[in-house]
Image 1 (tube, helix red, strand yellow):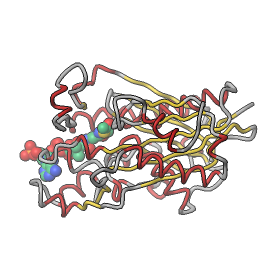
Image 2 (cartoon, helix red, strand yellow):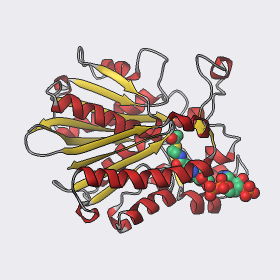
Image 3 (cartoon, helix red, strand yellow):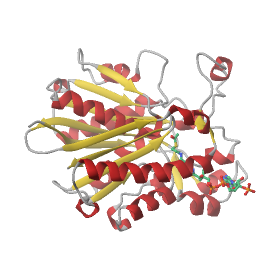
Image 4 (cartoon, helix red, strand yellow):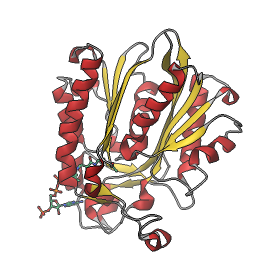
Length: 322
Ligand code: ACO
């Protein structure tokens, strides 16, 4: 049997850090409110001129180096993002050219904060069906570009960054199952309501901002992530205690804690980066994974549950042996 196995991880965060105290100077908020309600202390923000693909390229190069492969051997590139550099070509194609890779399929996936889980799911199918041997899968975002810095209910939550993995075909072990879902009826709870069809003037004016009914999103997220955990364990005939690490989407420490509680996991088995990264949307899961791999917490053969929830709504999980 062929598995898709993670053989290298990489991450990149812009050097520019914005603390909660910095935010106190621009909106009516406090460090205490942000920490208590979200767990966030700081976030990284791209500087003027630094684009999503710039961040993605750094993360991709680090993942390629960690996997110890030649970039020319990559035969599939999937980039999850909601903040592409251009309407077209896809950011995956722009990245492909920068990496001097030519000819392999390259495309973007848009599932907001669940984007990386969607991208992993697609890459896993390519690998297990024999269509790819070495895939580059990235989640990268510059949400700072779609934030209304006058709206305290959203601007304190997000940050910029990129995370990447190399997935390789392996006879040994790797991804055990993937689960992705969507329900478009929730569009109005979390969206950027402007684009080609509607409000294009807002896009041109740089005023196409995130709108979110945070409290309602929170309730659906907690319930949905609880269900996806059950679905993933049932599909693999596994028990909660089989999981070594939870690598969750970093939207709110209270959502993460609720999922850990549902899994009866101690917070020592949960990778938490929200305090330092904020919510980096599609980048948050691969960034968290990269942090815990590089600091030695996640070890070979351990069982990881990756999960995310985001706009759409979309949600999903990946269960993998590392
Ligand atoms: N500083 C100070 N006060 C604030 C701030 C702020 N930054 N933001 C809101 N408040 C106030 C509100 O105005 C409200 O005041 P009121 O009681 O006088 O009306 C009060 O704080 C409580 O507001 P709530 O919205 O009820 O606060 P809540 O505890 O729900 O926390 C939060 C808000 C952090 C947004 C939370 O609801 C959340 O994390 N939601 C889920 C976000 C999420 O998971 N998104 C999905 C992924 S993101 C994606 O896909 C792009």
